[in-house]
Length: 398
Image (cartoon, rainbow, N blue to C red):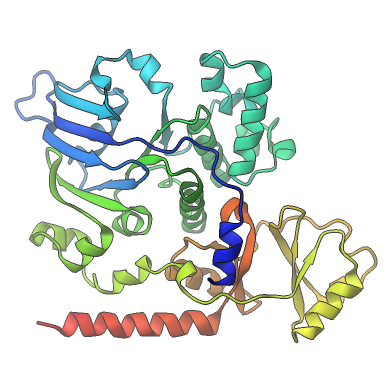
């Protein structure tokens, strides 16, 4: 077993109840005055604990399909089962308190603090104050935001990426088995979007919720999805399969056109950082002896060390020169621009981070954002060269 796998397996066991199967059985939505259904007789089974991506052109009904699961839109006919429970017969308000829902822009209440935003559903469910407060702090820690630092802030004091993390935390507050995500990362910049995607994959590795995720971005679907449903107008499912199968064997010309050119090269987005060799950097911890950190760097012939906090979370790089300053490790603040990827990140993500790194490596994190090692540019380029060669060979086959 690799060092990274060993570290990952030693992390705390998930505490969540996990996901539940979803079955849409002959679901139709016909709006009054319309002759053509917006969603027409859709049958789709979503396995428990998987991320299923709904993708397709504008107006194909993917968002309508998803919103019928928590009955923000009422189906005209058909059954929707979560586990063995037909939710079309449940009180819709009570149902929504047990289904997480994340929208673009997070949708936080601006007049409530971060803690109060996260606590909305637990309070509706009549949780006591102690249990609610503990859950708020647990979720802030889960999405890698220090509870003491962020609990009492207001949404306007947060970046767009931080707000979106709070939106995810709020959706998870009552530990729902199902999470619905409606283009949640579409309003942030590309770098923040990549990091939010990585954060979702990290959370899913720990929580194993059943996630239905609507996106218009096929590359996002390939990166995040265990399965992808490609829809045409009326929510007709043209192909429902794993990303690997859709890329290798598109069902028809519509799917081929939707995937776009260079489908073989998109296989690069299926290869994860955890699939390549990781290396160890020189490491120090906040509060360590700086002289020992300097020695660790020189023993590895390095000019920098990566500083970790008490929870093994990377904070920033410090050079040997900086470490020679008095009390250099007594208080170390987080570098918000620290180049890092998770074990679930793709090689393309790692390359993007590598291009802005001044250290020749990118830090790799695992569960709860704990340090796993570093990925080197040589390792990354060697892996990508091999994948590109295989992709070209595949494209040349008749």
